[in-house]
Amino acid sequence: MSDTPPSPTCAHCGARDDEPPHDDILRGSFEAVFTHWYPQVLRWARRRCVDLHDAEDVAQHVFTEVWLHSHRYCPRRGSLGPWLYGITAHKAADASAAAVRRHEGARDLRRLPAPETTDTCARAVERLGLAPHLAGLSPDRREILFLAYYLGLTQPEIARRLGLPIGTVKSHTRRALKSLAPAVTDRA
Image (cartoon, rainbow, N blue to C red):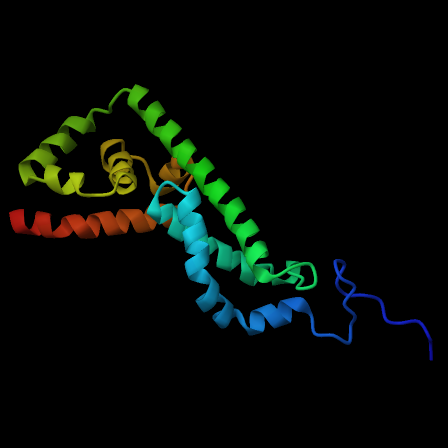
């Protein structure tokens, strides 16, 4: 039997094989961590993001990151709060960069010639009286509907153009159409 201690399993603190791994501890208490820290993470995200929806997305991404990469947290290096704040800051910076790309994409769209179908779409919007309902949508959802129905882009094309995940484009489209449905059925 060797007198040398087992090699460390945590490169940051030197925790040994006979101690529970950090990620097991964090994952085991994930519900409590989420319940306790989500409101604070959301406040941090709101301070760093312009849009409330972006801040909520950031908070969700933070906890996804915590779950997927719990092995990166080492309690001996510091408490959980600063680690979560660091993840939030990085995710919020990513969200801000995506917002800038979306804004730049919208500016580029204004320079494009409108397709021939624009007149047909505009007449349909006027005939159905949808303009006030479209104005009530968030700018992101209005932009996605514009790209889809006025410019005829597919959802993957919209996602690439706006720098958004395809799931976000799909959910914004579904929610926008769902909010417009009563106006269309009332007119039909």
